[in-house]
Length: 67
Ligand SMILES: [Zn+2]
Image (cartoon, rainbow, N blue to C red; front, top):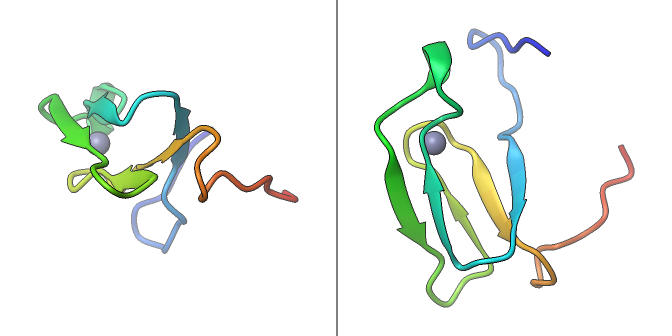
């Protein structure tokens, strides 16, 4: 699966089971230094480097996607 950066693409969504998550962009060309995020009072957090969204499993933002 390849992604183009010159067009808008929805952020990747990763389901997680912890409010504390780490992200390194998946490594490779799109990688970035490993950073940790805490969701705090939210049920999701977005990586400021790669826009990846981490959604807490079972949280209010955990909605099944039709496609
Ligand atoms: Zn990231």
